[in-house]
Length: 170
Image (tube, rainbow, N blue to C red; front, side, top):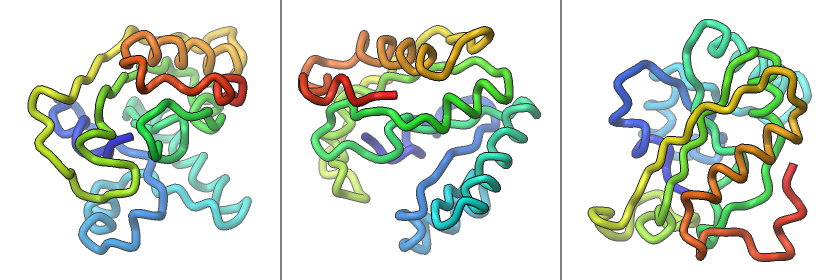
């Protein structure tokens, strides 16, 4: 729902982002991602997807957190979208917990179709850091359900999925 650098800029530890190549069309963003050694998601071939997956797992196993959005894209209307399974699979393989972050009202400040904020976020944006969700002994679907429930618990109702979308998640 929001450009990933903004909520992460104040975290007091090293972290990497899982970044979709759509942003690579913009040189200044590409430079930041490349220099920051972020996980550059490459969906062009199965081999490139596997390389991305392995890079993220290596970071996780080395204790470096990865920030990834489970929907795989920014929401066009600010509502939570169905999840893709990659991040849950990475967490299970690396045996690391997931710490969900609910990002409220980001679509009002930076719509899904934009690359720059359309208004000041002061007093509008809210970030809620949930308790860690253990992946130990759980399947990816169970983990996805727990993450979804956590996110929805702190998102305003207008960011909840529409009824017909709810059954589509991982």
